[in-house]
Length: 221
Image (cartoon, rainbow, N blue to C red; front, side, top):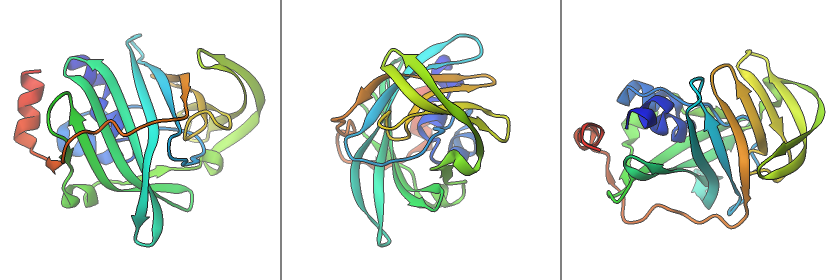
């Protein structure tokens, strides 16, 4: 479980709400999804993520549903990590695009065979809930490049983040964010598979989040 906690399964799958993991659970957020969000239900991508120490994990991201949120289109953005010490870990966030930001209104998590848990609204409201949906005003476009990954060869736009956090290569149809590759200071992400028929992996009826149960799961994976 230490590797999962350090790499931030909670942090990564809650990158749509980055303050939640660190503030409420003591986790470290993983790399955010840099790119240009194009939410199409069923679209997804599998990524290999690598830490500064060379530890690798596979993460799958996908759009698995759509519903109205305050009169706007909301999309269920799901992240999955398989083969962790606690089994498959899944989180989905109901996300609305607001200008160039993606705003989270609900988050549901499921660890292994345990029942899914929904984060309480007060926890959601108390943390930062915005994630860039379009990096083009936060990054410099340095031109088109041909990038080859295990998912294939892509003609991608190369963006350098203005805050110095890293470089992103973005191509149409390369997952919901178009992200083909991200190279940060300490971590990297590479697209290994394009998914076109993603389905919701959350099973069962969500129960309210129980921090005591979560702590016990960490101590006794």
